Image 1 (cartoon, rainbow, N blue to C red):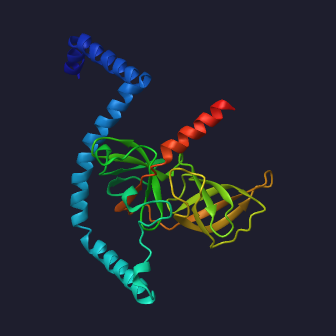
Image 2: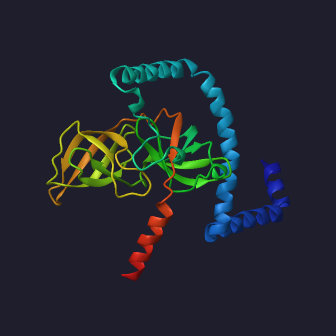
Image 3: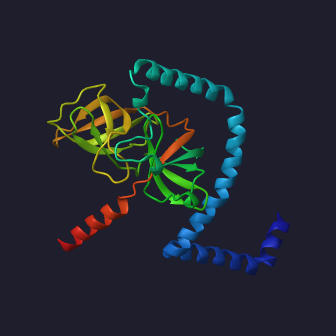
Length: 275
């Protein structure tokens, strides 16, 4: 113990210098957006490479499950082909209304957190492929999240299982809108709030993305109504939504590029400014 104290006293000036340097760098990063963005991009680049290697090992041991999933998916596709009179009308996933095939970028999840209040995913697509913040991320079952930060080859995604997430959504049957949030409690459920009490809602109704967002196309699946709660102090419902997606097991995802987003955002910003 005496040797530890002697070491500290002997190197106290160096240790104080290092401590002050770390504090000053931290304050510089926090107070300057340019430095902060550079640090985030560098961290994404480094951690993205590590996560991709770890994910490759995990995938090897998960091959049987993935093969089973592929077999089930092939069965569904064959069923569609056999039941359609004209196979050319097969509803392709990338033919979403308002989104061209070239507007969708396929990517892969290499890290996925779902056990915290603020969960994120890391995917192996970045600026090199035209990925930008505020692009929507979906898969074959429904929405996954929104692009938060990007580096050259990787991006982080604000998961729908994040208490800061807020997405425009609606009840498919009635078109009544609300805001989709997560209360941080259960990875299998999200909540639709601000739904007017005059809306016709019942357990099992489908919840989809609304048309009031430039991030997600309209009518992308989210989940089904599980429970309906009434707030006696307001005129709104709070709806518990069971997700179609298993957010604890994500593989390939699709990034939706809305090429009109910047134009729409600029127009709306200019309109508000002139009011």
